[in-house]
Image: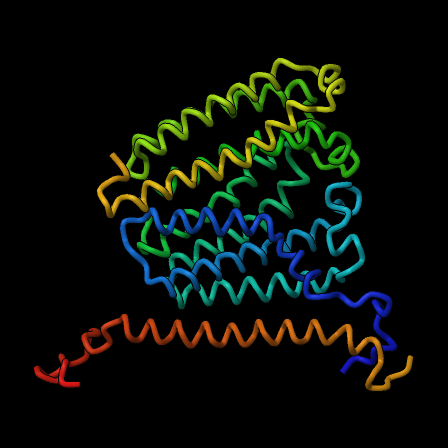
Length: 311
Length: 61
């Protein structure tokens, strides 16, 4: 038993909410949503209890990798405005606690997913946690300006895991959903990096804005958005697509391309004048973009039993 | 620091402890329900290496 008089954090006792914040709840929402879509878009139905439990364990696994990321990145989080209030830099949670929580929840989530769903889904979850915590956080994030591109893969795995929970095997469709998130991540984060101007510079994170400059980042956003639009609209003509998805994809990608084109055709002087309004709008649109694409996939899958979804 | 039962730190910790307790209880319930579903959904009687159930047993209740 610990004597409370010797506790190093006697002034502040971490509350449950502080530990929950370590799990990156906002990222968890995206993980849960895309994993649910992956699971429901699969041609095999899942018992609601098994589905609920499995998605919960995927969410816990994602949260665990978030805690490990916060443990490793505490030094740069403290420097960046956007992340300075996270539990470790704010002094609410000790780094060791975050590490312990991350490791414990990783083990628990992988084991439980193996029991509730199948070994392949559990293996994919373990791979995702390692990919995000080790490959992205520990290795690529501070080493290459392509950090966001490759790191985006970690956030793209949940629909694949969701699909495997239902089917127990791989197929082409979940990898299309993977590709959608994978291609969406770079323009989403580069737009953020453009208007969170000095954050990544201060933290010495080799973001594209720091290593290749802002004009190059604007060009990269445009190129990735063009590739993303081709992929997103093309997905409409696969087994997970249909009329609803096609209309959604056409509207959203037209808007997204327009935003990216405007970003590409601006310079810093123009952006400073309106306080990065175009970049901020593009970033906000990117959130709806992903949500609505996956919403459309879900709508197609949900309507199939009535003979309405799909082609 | 005084360690009387009514010390302020006990009040602060209470919320956290209750929260952890509720989560653990929820976890136990989830495992129970999951186990029940797995057992009733999976056809254990026809698992490989086991004999088929005798005809007439099913549906007698």
